[in-house]
Length: 332
Image (cartoon, rainbow, N blue to C red; front, top):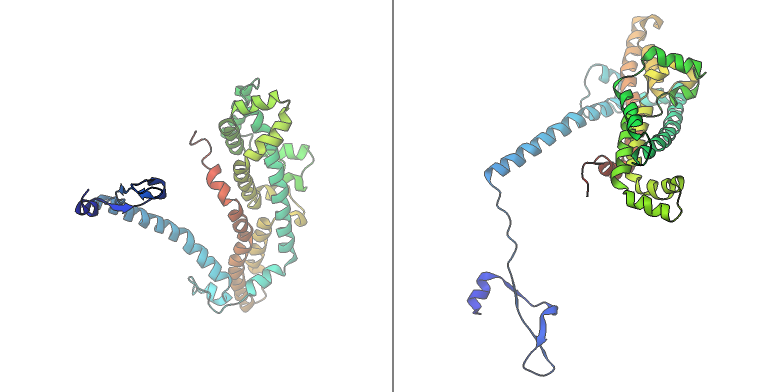
């Protein structure tokens, strides 16, 4: 091969695996391997326009979500007068911790925050356990009556008993004005059951279950030793869903709770904002104006306090969330 042809076609590389015996005894001779340099695919004008529109759309969505959060965060650290007059945009004006000091000095807010932590942790554990206990049997094809039971479960997602019947059930069970009123009635979510059942059915093959049975493994042991370790992405997804619902729970507490010591943080925040907006308790116009400014500041500070726990939890389950959200979408 000519020198000109070698230069025009490709680079000459001398890999060690191409060693062969040459004419000289005991000395290897290397043969050249011709490889074409990888070519970059040329993007057309239509492709560039499509990418530009895609990035522009994503940046727009990011701005729609991020800018209000920045405004809330900046307002929570700003002076009450600046917040009320609308001077705060995306950076604090006259930086102060006054909003957080007032909020955290209120024992009702601290108690409500701890109550919400209890409801979220206990409610999530109970919900995940009951969801798995229902979804795993429904994922087995050998379960007798699997179709009617699954149909009854899905039916409750379309039609519910209503507010008054649910309240009467909670009352008859003796759970009014107790912590269990926020844990038991909403313990199982139909959508989460569908996700868990689909995961067990598609990601855990029947052959694995049959092999475990041949080795003498029972249903409960198979669930604990085999199914649950393989279902970590799904468990993380449904646990995050249940935790968000429990943390943001407001209406059930308003219905079932009467003791203020049992209120979650969301209901406490509502009461605090209403009390700060109550004009009848102000003795003069200056005090009324001061209370109004403080109410505007507290509104943003309390939003940040109520949002931080969920924002701190999400990074730990984000790697599972991407996997779990695609459950059943791709089978391979």
